[in-house]
Length: 382
Image (cartoon, rainbow, N blue to C red; front, side, top):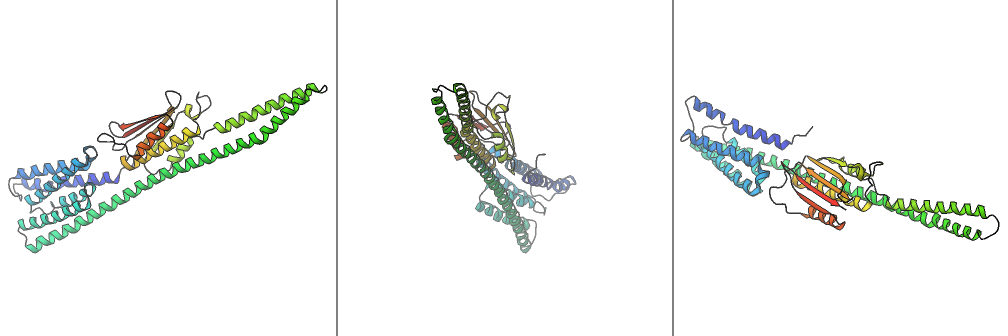
């Protein structure tokens, strides 16, 4: 079951509360009384602007980009202040100011958030004076809302730090798992190479000497038939040893097992790995396993893809498919369900490293956003 992001739940609750705050105003106006300053439609027009800016800045910021979202935040802060000043006798309307301060943490630096908090305190104090409260009461209300906004801002900042910490932990986990997998396969490759050398140097040389000795013995008059048979056996043994040495040198690590080991304990995102039987070298599948160099390249590419999905996409799922390439090589296709890219993609160090790694093997890499959301990477290694 898909895990619901706590930020989504908090955003839904905040949006619902902002809408519910208008209900008492509507009920009073329907009853024939009003406590708003000026025409009633002005307050509702400003409220409509506030809700529209809240939805756009709070829910569609990934698609609009940071520049547009900052303008929307300015509209949101201005509209909230206007709503409070136009309805100074509604004591619960200033809660909108708390929400704007909390939302500003996501889209503006700390000094801007601090300025918004101070401005909102002044708005609350001015609303208190407009409602007929004494100066002390207005200042008290301003102090209360200063503490409410401060607590809200600090809570959101703590949640963001915790979320960033989890993200960095997931990145480190992916990098560590990939490094461990590559190190393990490198150690196994070195061990296979050592064994192949030992076989070649010891058994291979001895069998070669045996073949030479038997070759000399064939020139003798006696036991020619037995010597010929022994020479054939020695040649067969030498062929078997050479075949075993070659197989040890060519045998690559199990790609599917290695990728599952990297991704199975990743806390987030959930990674779905699919390796075609032809690539995995399954008997009867009509394919062969990739060599060690391409296996390591694929592992490193998967590491970069997961790191980008964690760091930039905030994805819940990543799908990785590995199959045969068009010319008998490898084709790696990865897709996530993150925020994608709102504009032309500018490759960072991760994507550039992935492209360079594929180019070193004569391959290519394509990447870009996909609809309805997400980001996709396709690498082909010949």
